[in-house]
Length: 123
Picture 1: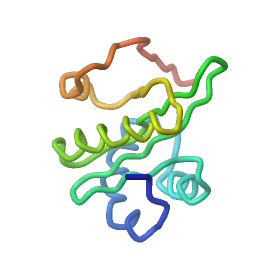
Picture 2: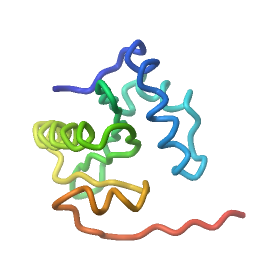
Picture 3: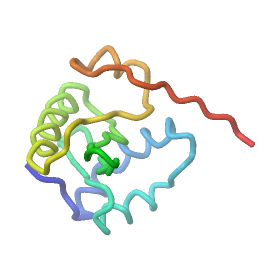
Picture 4: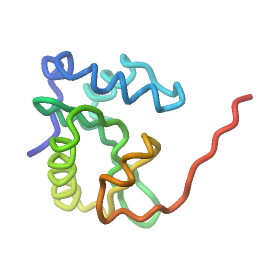
């Protein structure tokens, strides 16, 4: 499976992403995400009852795929995570990372190491 770029599935699944954006610290609006998907800066993984948005991160030493936004049915999201992991490996990424999100994700996902918690202060 590869990520989708068509907006038909985006409109069907955008409520899942809209809910995930509420945990993102107001960094992006729904339209910003849709435009990034269309332009290929973000990857969109629509499901029947869930959706995920990823981003390829290029570090000096390797590439990583960041699961950035996810919402919907937990079992379907876990299955999508496995598809994303296979795709990430195919494109040469060395790891998958998850930034932010609800604390419950830590319990649901297996094999992830908590690396660096993030704190934010508004100015």
